[in-house]
Every structure is written in structure tokens, then in C-alpha cells.
Image (cartoon, rainbow, N blue to C red; front, top):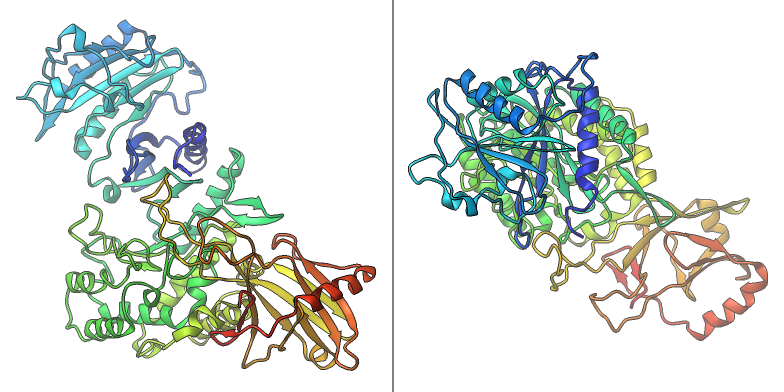
Length: 635
């Protein structure tokens, strides 16, 4: 699945426009080059909404709020030239526009204007480009990224203001400038643009834009639009943004969920949370390594924080493996955390970054793929690596903005609680095999989250349980619920850590990997009344009843995929689950599972005898117990 598509930029512009209208009226929207990934020819695009730290517009476009000017006209060629020279007069710098041709769109008017600013001094230089070379490259994108700069004068800075227009509108590509000169240029252009529609802006943001302006980003990612919210100083700021984003997305035909397999599911995108400080000088983590250690240990103690809010893909091959699922051994993690908590007072950003970034990584050494990623904490080897940020990545997009806000409040409350040294765990928990067995079952995850919420309550930080229970219900759909005077039975979808495969996808090979997603798991729970009266049989095999010491889960192969592990093993579906009497072994109810999306469906009583005969023919010994409580039907 590619990151871009024929409609994605259109949707992104519509979403940016709606957010601009609702949250930041008068803000500037700039089309920027985004990240470039291996295997992709061009950088991905990124739309940036920018406004002042106080929420006020940086540039006052006359088209905003002027109901008398509803013109959608674009400047003609002479008017574009007049605009260029008027801007040059404002900057006290003669400008030398050069006309260029677009081989992809012959009716497009394009002017390239060499323009640079050094220590407040503006400079425009002629570009003596021969007529046959006055043409953009064949690549897609704005004109400013397609200039024939290999023919630019050697003695001049390669900074070019580009203006282009066609019957649909006009666009300005801003040269790479520092923040204040860029604002001067934008304000000059805006002051002369009143007769026409507002131009589309393209360019590169200054290096300090994120700290001096408020910036909201919308970028292309496989299957989704990625929205990067501006810095939120309070939880209420975050909650307000999530509400605004949901309303704006709905208005333009977007949403944070999809309907798949007969149920509402996540889009598959992440809803990552980042914690940091107001600035690098006041970053709370740099001078409190013991607090950071407490956070990391607490998260390691509670699998619900890694699995309950995450997507279907969890475990070592996921996008957010826990540190004890990644490249580091438990001994290395223990040594690192014990070392950090004994550091003396003072700024320890370098020690923290160098100690942890090699340990919070997946098994291939990718520091971004981690439940708690530190690749933006303090890594001077990367341009965006020194921001003092902890990124919590084991969170997926949720269908309700209130759920997302509740998760953010939970994480923030835990960070506050762990400021107290006596609330921090003193060591790592030895999970062993139970991490990918018992700890991935819905009942165990809810029990673990209840422990987390109880910890907060004891610290005076009580949170409402209802949104978390709603997430749990949505996250682990019911495949079967049976109720009678003989008791109640529940079967819920559970988590399965899909194994990583060695093959590389042809498309997106550097950003995605094959896993064997044919494996599925469900958990069986029942009340005491049912356990006294009945017993369960699955595929002709008796199942033990779960209890508090030993829950019950069943792993099975849903389908045969290619590539996959064990390609010679067939799929286990359809499954036949029977509830039988403890007294005479007579069948009470029978269910059939053909696909996970449909769940277990009741079998008509007339078919029970036929299915029972088929069951006896293929009966086999009880499957081995895998890791304690998961029975594997492949065995």
C-alpha cells in the first residue's frame, strides 16, 4: 500500500481548510516537502498550518473576513510581474523574474525570482538562463521543487521565489529563509494580493518554526492521513483538539475508523502521545532520570498499557514492541535502569539518550519501533533527534475522541503519580512466556488496567472507568455470548503476537514488513453455574474450564496465507464448539465458527447429529498447552 494516492492530497487540503476555519482563522497553510523513505522516488508531501504562539495569525491576508471580496480570480501575467516588483520595492531589493515553461501543463504561467536574505540584507540576482533551458523538470510537485538549479549562477545562493498561475488558481513557492525574513516576505505578498483569491503557499519551514510558532501538520501515510497536532500545554488543550479534529474530519468525509469484517475497526494508524517540556532548558526529564526510570519500569509491569490501546498487531514484530520484546535482554535493561537512577543531580540528557536508545528498539535495531520510543529524546545523529520527547507509540486511532482523550489523561496522570519516588517500582517484572500468553487475554488485560486505575485512585488521581471499559469492549469483540438457566458462556477475541517473516514487500518494503497474520486467538470465560452443569468440546476435544489461576484461550489458524509460517499446515476453520451436559454428555448447544468476523453461530438442532459424527471421525488427542493457558489447535 503506497502512502499517496490520487485523492489523498485533496482530502488533506479539505481537512486543513476545515481545521483552519474552526480552530485557527487566518492561519497560513503551506505545502511542504515531507520525509523521503527508501524505495520512494520523491519526498512525501506535508501540509503545515502555522499561526502565532498566542493563536493570532502571523500574516493578515486581506481575503480573510472580507465579505465584500469574494473574488476567485487569479492574477494575469502582467499583474504577476507588478506584484513581483511591488514586493521588491517593499524589500528595497530589485528583483529579476525569469519566465519558465512547465512541460506537464502548457497553460501554466511560471516566474522564478532569485531572492535571498543574509543578516537582514535582501539580495536579488539575475538568472542568465538560455531560452532552451527555461523549463521545469518532469517531476511532479510545485514549481519551486522542479527548478533547473544545476544551471544556477555559482556565485549566488540557490534561493528562488517562484510564482505560478493557471485558470484554477495561483501558487507561491517560498525560498528557504529564516523565520523573520520569511514573515516579511509573506506580509509583503499578502499586502499586494487583495484583488485576487488567496494563493496556495509552498516551501520549507524555518528550522525554529516548531518552537516559535504553533504548527499543525497533515502528511501522507499508507492507508491514512497522519495529523500532527501542535504542542498542547494542558490535557484540556489536547481534548479540545481531538474534539475539533473529529468534527472537522467528519465534515469533509473522513473518520478515525473503518467498517471491516462486519464491525467497526481502527484505521490501522497510530494515535501516539509525546511527553516533553516547554523548551529544552526546562525539560523535566533531563534532570530527573530516576523519574524516567520509574515510568519505564511501571509500563513494563503493566501489559495493559502496551496492549489494551494498541492495534491487532502486537508483540516483537509490531510497530511498538515493549522493551522486553525488542533487541535488549532483561539483564541489559536492568543494568541500564539501575545506572540511570543512580546518576547525580544535573542535566543528564546525554547519558539518558545514549543509555536507552539502543535498548528501546525492535529486534532489527529500529529505534522508532518501540512502545516508548526515545529516538526524539537526545540523538544528535538525527536532525530531529534532540527534542527531549518520550513517544508512547502503543496506541491506535480510536473511533471516539473522548476515548483518545481518556487515554491521554491516563498516561499524564501516571506520569504525575510516578513523580513520587515511593510510588515507583524498584525492578523489572520477570514476565517470561506469560507475557505472550496470559497477559494478552482480554480478562487479564482488564484486571491489569483495574490495578493501574486503583493505583491512581490511591494517589488522589481517580479516573472514570467507563471510557476504558468501552475501549476494552470495542477492542475485544464478543464472538459468542450464551445465557440460560444453566449459566453463561462468553467467547471473546484475544490478542495473538504475529510472527515476523523474512520476505520483503515489493511496495513499501522499507516501511512495512510481512507478518503471519493468519493466526488468531480467543478467550473462553464462564460463570460457576455453567462450569458445574456443563463441559465444553472443541473439534471433538474436551476443553478445561478456566479459573482464576488458569484462564483459557484457544489459538488457531484462520486461513492459509502466502507467505506464512508452516505453509504445510491447513487452516483450522470451520470450528465446532459444543456445550455438553456433565450428567449424560448430551449436547445442550452447538456453535459453528466459519470466520472471525461472523463469530460463533448457533447450529440448528437437526444438524447436531451430522456434525457430531464428523467430529468423531477427526477426533485427535488434546492439544498441548502453550505457555500455560493457550491451547493450540495446530498441534
